[in-house]
Figure 1: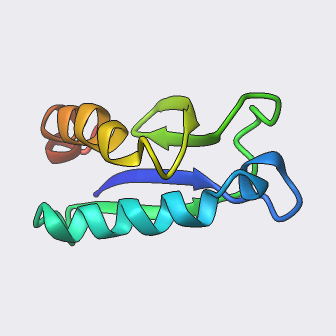
Figure 2 (figure 1 turned 45 degrees about the horizontal axis):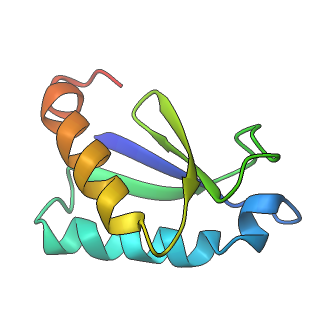
Length: 93
């Protein structure tokens, strides 16, 4: 399964920058794109980029910062939908 992790450190910067909303939007986008059972979006402990603006998201093996509810659709389309066919179906990532 292709995995997407959203930083949700309980007292961290990401949680304060609307990480819960980003997580919920990514979960909705998985359903909207018929990827349930193929792509998993889960909360994650700190991903180590607390000083970055926005939420940190790990997509496959790549970290992305600056994710917000306003750009979550773009990030999903440009990175999850782009990387998933390349990595998710082969188990890499």
